[in-house]
Image (cartoon, helix red, strand yellow):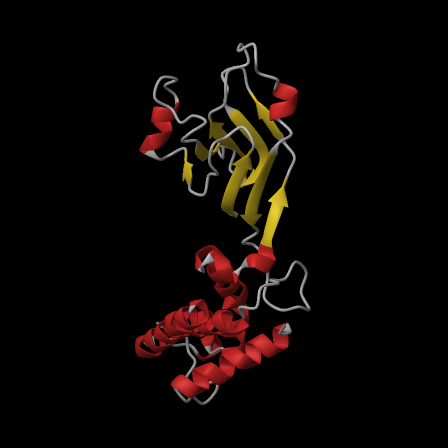
Length: 232
């Protein structure tokens, strides 16, 4: 895996390949005219590298991110109405799969409490159930990224065959921490072998900042081509 310095150098090489430049005169941020606003290319790359990495974690096919998929197996309970609740949920993480032995199928799509489908879940007669469960990212109302996930739904606790202590055990939630950084010399760095894709995404972002929209499009096209080639 690349170090952070290797990432920065790779992005710089890619930008030079797409649109040769001379530092620093050609790297003035769009709209800046004062000489003090001139910034060398390295600072643009450094500023955008981690966001480029996170963009990749948010959007790349999951088959390319296996090394960054983590498991959550705690913080789950079922309330009196049969709604599963998972605490310790992060608003910015990418949730991949929820599996529970009581459900007839896994959940692989997650909605938010702003989705119109969430209102449907409040009706016990039409909400998701064991055959077609629904997962909702909810309760991010205090200005932080901490919240909970609601699972609709399990059997209510008033059912005689319902054992909440057992239901609470048999689950796993797979997710990707999308706040990781680029470079194996940084804390909490990305583990999946997507270095080339991160480089292209960062080069695309920097090109847009510099107003080189043709260069940004070249990076985007090359990024998509590489993804397709990997998936074949």
